[in-house]
Length: 177
Image (cartoon, rainbow, N blue to C red; front, top):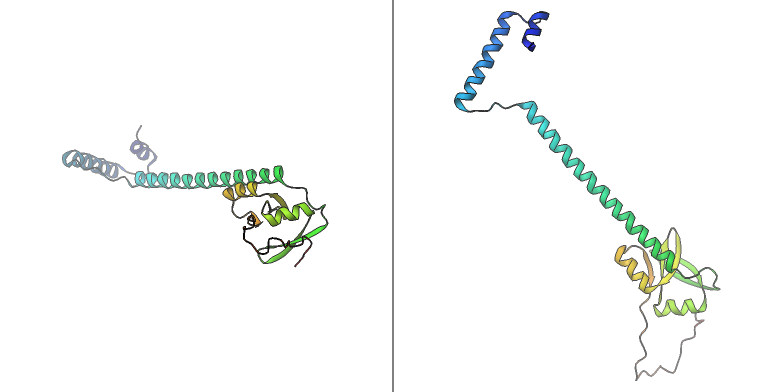
């Protein structure tokens, strides 16, 4: 039973209206076959546009999730590198001052760690509001992954030149600025 028959039976439309609708449908079909013109189905177009919009939004969400997952993976790699290679700290008796952006911070180091920091063999990185000492090679690996992690890295000192007039005069290690 067609929709037209159901509407007639329920009394929502009369026979005149039903025959008028039937004739208009017949005329559209004839015109379509004659002119090979497709009638535009607006509902179909709206559904296609909505589907295309949904696909685009899903693609963007998936890309954001992928970037977030990559960022978390890099953060985990950096954390693991720091934890595996950090030098024992806070047991030293020498206060080493350094800057973290505009703030002057202090970390306590041993004498050998102070020399290594000065020679560029150790670097200071910040992890979870805490400062850690790590080897420079590890700090370079971290900087490749996340360049915002490194706080302090001194350049390695070069060997004194052969004709350096001050080569015989050593700067004392306990000299603090």
